[in-house]
Image (cartoon, rainbow, N blue to C red; front, side, top):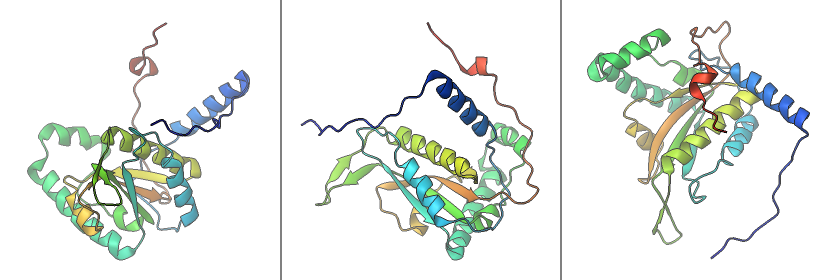
Length: 221
């Protein structure tokens, strides 16, 4: 059965305007950096909500939208997440991680201490749904779950940066404790924690470089 069709909402720009918009957006995104020191300054909830609405427009396999966002702002919940995450991180840095992984992380200065999980005003925990459920509780197959959720997460990071907020993707391994703490159903698994807020005053970030454009692109034709 074909879906009902509606007119496309699309805005085309003259070439000069299109070039300007693309260049300005590129420059804006080049300023984006992951930060690990956050301010506890409050962020309007409406800003977070609109950024989540933007992320929810992401394309997904068969339009199944296999994601769920849990937004933790309660101090006790954030504290519980931090304690559980640090327990996993201590095991990671204390012997679970292979030496080559630790060597790759060394220039970034990361360790098992994760105070930002309490300090930042919002923790957005993104869950991936392995399947959906209809009104009678029957399973609805989801397609390309990891890819779909990854696209939505990227759009959320972009939206938050565009709104003037800093972010950090945090993926303690394993993350099963998040489903328990946040009381999520069995068909959902934690994909990542996205920390969101203002950077702390005088925040510094590692001096890193992105790969050259020519190294990451191949134009054919």
